[in-house]
Image 1 (cartoon, helix red, strand yellow):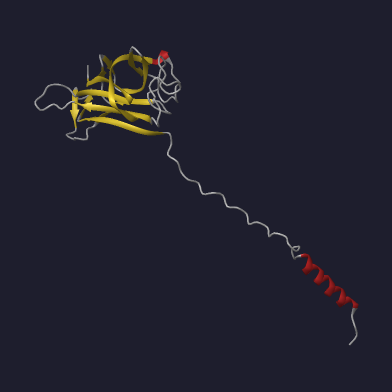
Image 2 (tube, helix red, strand yellow):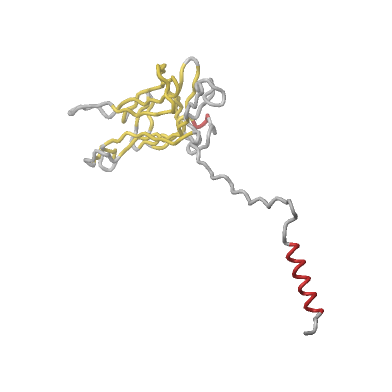
Length: 220
């Protein structure tokens, strides 16, 4: 058999390539690419909450009076929708950046606190026609006021005093046990038939050791 120089060159080249693919003696193997750590969800610093009271009738001008649907879920409602901040170990009332004294507070978190009422109501001694409003408050060491504003759907503390509809004095009470999360209540008084009194009750909110309240009623 005759020796072929061409085949010898191919054999040598293949042997050199095989050696080149081998890691040098003592070299560490390349590390495998690291996988990102799985994302762990966290609870946000505030929630969203709402409270409402249902009325079994609504005023109908075409009917000339109160029109009832005989439905205990009611055709009309009064509701408060609000961002619900949590204390998280803080002393929140009077705390700068949270509920500072002598500054208008959005009385909630994130989007403004919204009052929507499908019937005319009175809060404190102020008559408020049915509609949608924003609730702010003004905390001072001498007492609190609830601010009902005609401005709606604003973010955080975008407060315009020219849009005030009313400022209402609030009753204040110190709680023995703190309320961890800002909470609103619309508490209806229980009236037994044949009472002639329109629906009424207490509007109340509390955070930390402070509770504020005023009265509400349907109509004037």
